[in-house]
Length: 402
Image 1 (tube, rainbow, N blue to C red):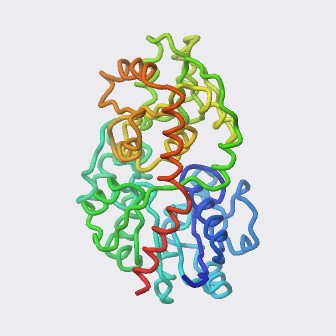
Image 2 (image 1 turned 45 degrees about the vertical axis):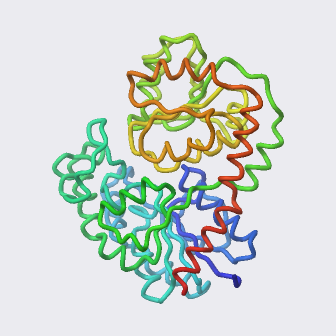
């Protein structure tokens, strides 16, 4: 493969979530493979510094107190304030490929339209369900929902976006304006990190011949870092690492945890953090708040297993991949793309609903030995390696270039 020039587009360029971590890891991995990489994003005080950040879009926020600030944020949904600097970067860098990640609201799909108009190949990694569900989550009143796959107006009628008619109306307008017909025409390939996501994209009307399933990967840097953390004596404990919000199923987990004798570490922050801390005061439940990358690895290496109790359609969470690469088994809800990640070793387990969560947790404490953990880590590294990902990514590039 010749040396390519790749522009990676992500609305944020700091470790805000799995999508942003993926975008930065992708850039690093492609550079190691000899390609030239640039980024386009929105200015944000937490962004990593890159030389091309002078081209980034001006920061907007829906949480600004001023009316003008809110209007600017609403206009950004439809691409206002993007074209000039973005086209300057395209002129300067002249990429062979524009690789999109999460772009809605703060950048908008105008980045796909403008690249396509120049004959640049566009690849889009689909990290969430925004392209089929205007409110991102495929969730309504705590249950999986797919009605917007065929009727986008439901997001407005049900006030699915932040329980706000205004926000939901904007989400509806965004979905209608940037519809699947346009996005499919401007995008040469959609990378779905799970087969589950691919099937939902097909249900939502996207062309199957443009959809490719490639699981997320763990960066070489993170792999090396994990290998340097020594084997630790295991506590009779388990861990949840992630956002403290309704769709993550934390309430079900905490209700089970208060009835069990095992220690549960909760690492992460979110809108329900204060509520949960006040409601669940058991000595066995330890809220750690924000933890950095090193602390996460240490935590994963000292607990018996990690848990992902999400009630929403998880796609391909990096937290599960990191846990497996640490040799730490995972108990996950049987939903979305989670089962695809947990088929790699018999150490892992699935539960179906809150009724069998408690018994599933108890069972997990009886399953493991050090030999199994080492095997789990080895299998996971092979399956989720950056090299594996790169080879599959190249296949997509070659297909759209032929």
